[in-house]
Length: 371
Image 1: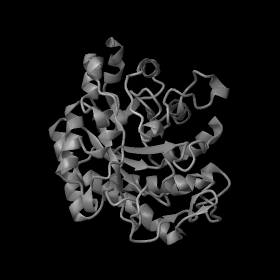
Image 2: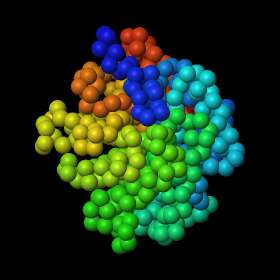
Image 3: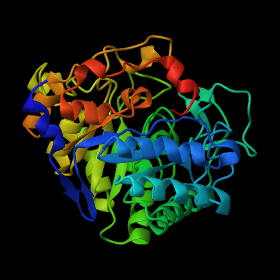
Image 4: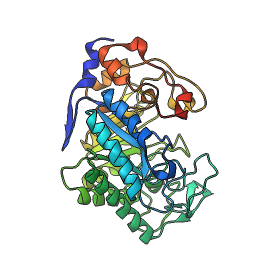
């Protein structure tokens, strides 16, 4: 690798958040928080990535204060004295190593993890659907919705109080907020439903607006969004740039500072019929349409697309040229790295120094522990 990688190491600032480089640790569910409380192992795990010079660390999804907001017993809470004390230790460790970090606040909606564990209450979602035609749990009342909006706002306030540098709202991958976006899981006839993506974005807009009001004007809010769902990898919320603008612009207007645009392969064009096979990716289009800074993500530093790895396929290699070309033309502002950072806490430092030979490829066995 050459000095071309310098494009990844430009500083970046949005509101009160200043980053030393453009590399983000993507939020990745690890389920190592017994009783919902992050402990010393979690703090050490994140500190090691800060020591490895990750520009911004986004935590694993950590759930807001709703009875069935998580779908696995190892997912951490972002509420309650014990869990918040654990998160205070995490951010203090990250700051001691010179890092910057935000929690990803989350509600899993009607999704089901691969475990027999059951939430202490019935799962909730817009219409009591896990996927089109697949009932699971109950449809949320307007009171449930209001309480959930308030729970997101309180989690953001707690993140700010604990010293986190930003907060990310999880609105992607078929979880609760995304279930409101998706016509296949939102069949509501009230003001939270509707035939258009703009109408179905009302819930997300209320969450964002409540968070913005709670944290003030200068605290950065990131929103993670995706077209694909874990329930349907081919799902698309926006088939055209016009529909994407209808979806995302109201959320930016409500207070989102950065859009974290999740796709399975960052190099794939979002609308090739508009700008060709080498066209803008999801994050590129989101930035073009809204003017907001964007984070791209999707199989960075891996030889294969990421779903395969969870089926037991290991991956090696960097595959970074396409990324650098997109960064050089400012298609998007930041790039999130996922599995590569699970296996190699020094991934960023090695990219910076040009030490490609010592980069560790991702192995599914690394998911078995926090390393």
